[in-house]
Length: 205
Image (cartoon, rainbow, N blue to C red; front, side, top):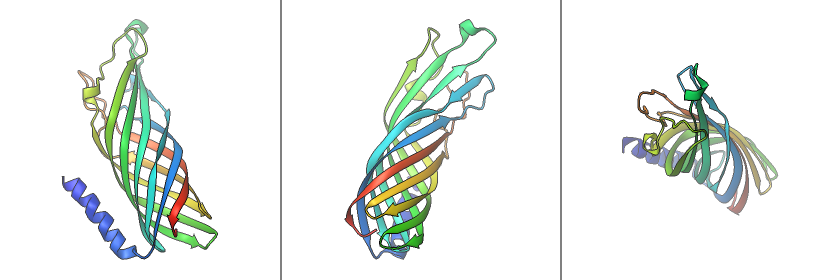
């Protein structure tokens, strides 16, 4: 609750500083993420996904940018032990509702072209999750081991050309996304690259 309160206070504080104009739009993009594993015997690979949702900008040169996104991501974990017959491999797929609240600054701003940078917190709620066993050996991770609420710090840059918005961002998980599973301690934090294109449908950006 304290973290959610902080997120709300951050949004209103930033909006109070920068309020002056408003823009609303939609966006869609590609993301690639990797869940870390602190065990040498466990390997994790990058996983491709997508995100789609709405964005808003409140403010002029300094602005606040709340968004609401659905993101599909995941991970592939596999054990590389001495006996291959005992090795397991699990594919994790999660769908999340993400709420980033970023504070932005427009380095260059004109009617045609804008270059901006953004940084801020994000809260992510898992709305669906699935674990698939890739081979015959059952892995240790279950859906109950995946945290349903996760926090990130997110930052990046973007360029606006007329009504189009292009963004490149990176976000890093501040908490463990996967808890300790059976006798395994994953200490798994999520890192994700995002590339998106947005379309302004209302207001001045």
